[in-house]
Length: 123
Image 1 (cartoon, rainbow, N blue to C red):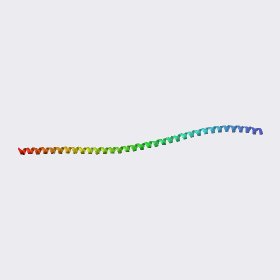
Image 2 (cartoon, rainbow, N blue to C red):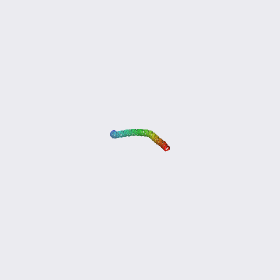
Image 3 (cartoon, rainbow, N blue to C red):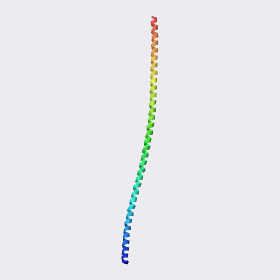
Image 4 (cartoon, rainbow, N blue to C red):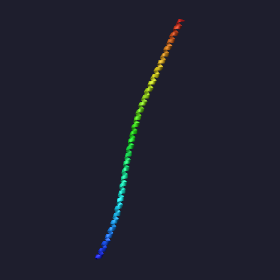
């Protein structure tokens, strides 16, 4: 009876050893899987961080472009206003010059008429 118990104990020990080795292999595989998941998680977090940074950069650039466009529109408005003012001043100057020449010609014609009238009356 003791021999049977010893044999059983021996088998139990071998079974325990075998289970222990299997458990160690399972633990090793689980540890490797865990490390792989941790690397994957780290990569995912880094990717999300890069995506957020890129999104912020895109938003910043869009805001800068909007400000640049707004500033350009203001400059264009000022340039158009200045050009209109200059065109108006040039037109006014041209009209003044044309009126002055016309008045000079009218004065010349009047002088000529007065001189001719005097000559006619003298005849």
